[in-house]
Image 1 (cartoon, one colour):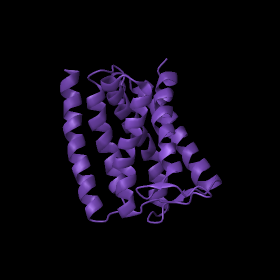
Image 2 (cartoon, helix red, strand yellow):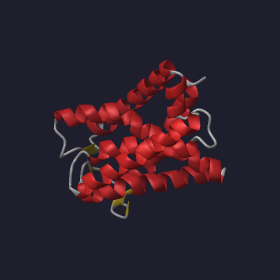
Image 3 (tube, rainbow, N blue to C red):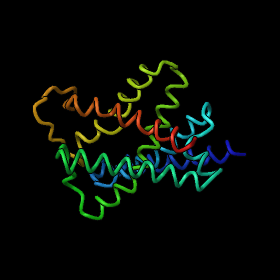
Length: 192
């Protein structure tokens, strides 16, 4: 029964992700919101084959626990934005108005769910934690940073270190390690 429900979310995820791609090619600044939600559904379904506590499984089984997980991810996302954007000034969202900026904080958990489930599904196939993190970082960069090179939804201002791979600063790429590992750690704490 649950697999059928998760499969329906997977199909909805494919549709939402397709909408995200269309919005990206139409140069819409909101493609990112749809992408985070759609890819969460897709990777959650893939992770569900080997994991018993994906975000959607938790949502379907225990809404209270899901809300705790959502708010923990919201706090992490807000901390990332506060530290990286406002305190260190490492990036900005030039295309967003105040509504988009506030909405992006509330959508952050969905992106983090997507990254955690992506990592979980990769780790179930590769088994090596280090290799799984590297593959997840590469996939995260391909999914989010490469399209941003064309959309410029967010622009980075990394001081001192100018080393880039595919026009993406190495600090940004290394930062993806935290976006992969910390959500997994948050799951473990919240779901004790």
